[in-house]
Image (cartoon, rainbow, N blue to C red; front, side):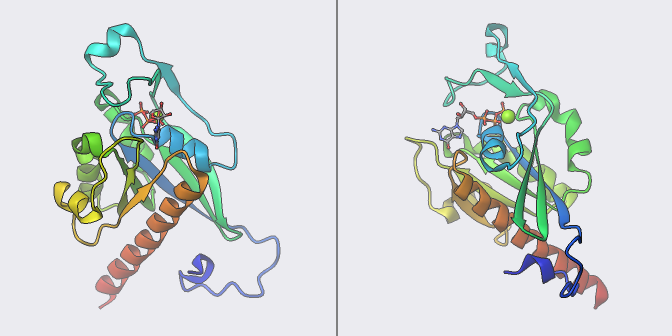
Length: 206
Ligand SMILES: Nc1nc2c(ncn2[C@@H]2O[C@H](COP(=O)(O)OP(=O)(O)OP(=O)(O)O)[C@@H](O)[C@H]2O)c(=O)[nH]1
Ligand SMILES: [Mg+2]
């Protein structure tokens, strides 16, 4: 797919100093699902992180099952940048995974073209709040199942059913540690968001 021209704008023959289109994508999902890992794996610039150390005192509120080796958590956001083509740059905003940081979501979500909801099949229900949020706000999103070692593999349509997703919501598998895999997820969300925005535009025109 040629993203540069998919918005209907003819940019052939434009000057070499033209600015690429920049879009904002959110990386969301439950606690410890790999959001910071994904942003770090794909970002071309050194990612900005806001990590704090998980303390003993927090163990009663932070459910570490499945991610027992985790030592830090995101308290505000992750930020990274990746060029998909010469004409399209994505700015990635990773959300904090814990409920007590919900208050930053509305700020982070402002102006986002689309979102990735990362899911861990060992704790699938943890991504319900993210799915609910994007459904409620009409933000196009894809669900990316982060394939942790040893986690049970599910069929993609089992994930669709378990999360009661609209059948139009793409579900993909990924490895959040892999740049190639992360980039494929981002291409999936850009394609889905463009399809959704075109459908909305067509419906309001006709
Ligand atoms: N085996 C495996 N480990 C992973 C994968 N993705 C992330 N991890 C590990 O899982 C832990 C959690 O990853 P983070 O990227 O911090 O998760 P997060 O979603 O940003 O966490 P919060 O910000 O606290 O919600 C880290 O120790 C990662 O190294 C994966 O695909 N496979
Ligand atoms: Mg994080």
